[in-house]
Amino acid sequence: MSAMVETEGRQSVLVVEDEESYQDALAVGLATEGFVVVGAKTLADARDILARSTPDIILLDLMLPDGSGVDFCREVFHSRGIPVIMVTARTSEVDVVLGLEIGAADYVTKPYRLRELVARMRAILRRPPSTSDDDFIVFGDLKMDFVRRSVTRSGIDIELSRKEFDLLALFASHLGQVVTREVCLDTLWWGMQLSDTRTLDTHVKRLRQKIELDPTQPRHLVTIRGVGFRLDA
Ligand code: CA
Image (cartoon, rainbow, N blue to C red; front, side):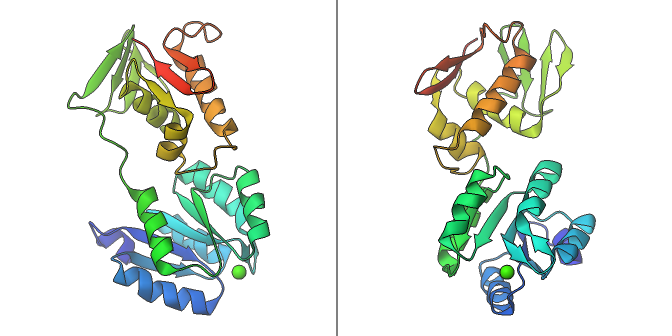
C-alpha cells in the first residue's frame, strides 16, 4: 500500500478481483506496463486500502464474495472521483453496468486481453486537454481561473463540483465554438455510450443554475439542438 504513496510518477491501480488467476496475471502484467498494482480480493479489502491511499484508477470486478461492485463503484466515483473500470463476466451484465449510471468510466468483459485493458486504462488516465496558455478566461461577468480551479462572479466564488468545473473548462477552451455531446462524453465520461447522455444533461443544467443569471434563458451556455453546446462570452 505504501508503494502507492511513495512511487512518484508511476500511476497506481487498485485491482478488486476475487479470481486468483486474474489477480496474479494482472499483478504481473500491469506492473510490466509500468503501473503500481495493489490487489484486493473483497470489497472490505478494497475499502481498507482506499481508507489509506488514493489509486489513480480502479479495476473492479462486478461480482465479489462480499457483495456487488455496483454500489462500490458509485460510492468511489461520487465520494473520491477515482475512475473505475468495471469488469463483467457476461456480456449481459454490461447493460446493467451502463444502465445504472454508477459512474463507471469504462468496462471490460472477461476474458479480456491485457493489451486492451491497458489501452483503456491509459485512455482514461490521459490528462484533459490543456486549456490555453492563459491561466484564466473571462466571459461576461464571470472569471474562470484554471490554476485555482475557481469560477467567480464579480469576485465572489461560485462553487462547482469537480466534474462541473471540468465541463465548463472544456466549453471555455472552445469559447464561441460548438462542443459536441460526443466530445463532452469522450472527454469527461471517457466514452460513455452516446445513448446514455442524461448525466451530461444533468451537469449542463446544474452548471446553468450556477453560472447563468437566468438559467431558463441561458446567455452563456447555450444548447445547439442535436449537436451540443456553446459557451458564449
Ligand atoms: Ca468475481
